[in-house]
Length: 217
Ligand code: BEZ
Image 1 (cartoon, rainbow, N blue to C red):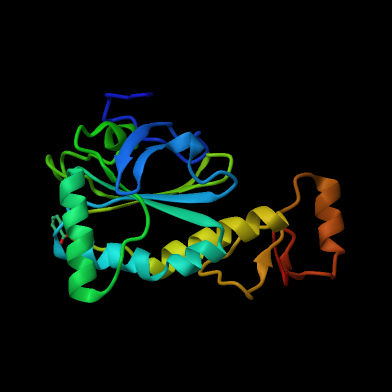
Image 2 (cartoon, protein in one colour):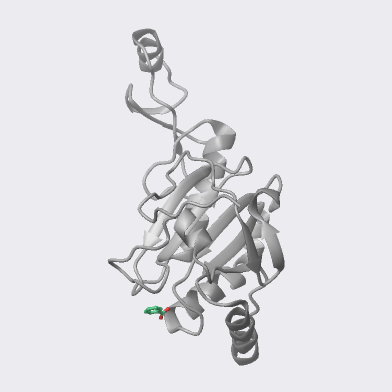
């Protein structure tokens, strides 16, 4: 197992996702063998049986079909035992009917949370912050979110950002502010003077100037 005991090192956008083996609610998982040819959303929550975490975890569970459509597997994590995870999953199922049908890492020794910079001691010395890692099928980290303990994440934004990454990759374009599927996309700006002249004469896109052109997909 790869470990990184330095909690100040946080994986960054463009890095390969650190590999690990962990005990989860779906059994032991080696991350490099998980979600082959798929995207992964790896996310941490501070603690089982807490209110904000329960709403967030339920949000992931209720949107699992949308993550499936986006060829994406979910994997949760907290520094709780497997027994706590199992009891919480069962409790939420009994109380609300929502079932957390994806692996949740029992990171009791904090190995994975340290590897992924999920421990931010000035926010909490005893719990992981609310991190979200968007990891592509080549296991490269493509987007990272960190939220504090007292603010829940936004499921619409997680889904929007995931789709934006995938559509951007597939079409070699960039996504403007608040992009949603169906909106115009940004044509990559020219990289030299010849390309700039071409762009200034290109009427196939909506051009504000050579560096800001949009088009439909
Ligand atoms: C919560 O999920 O409600 C929560 C967890 C840890 C600290 C504060 C709030």
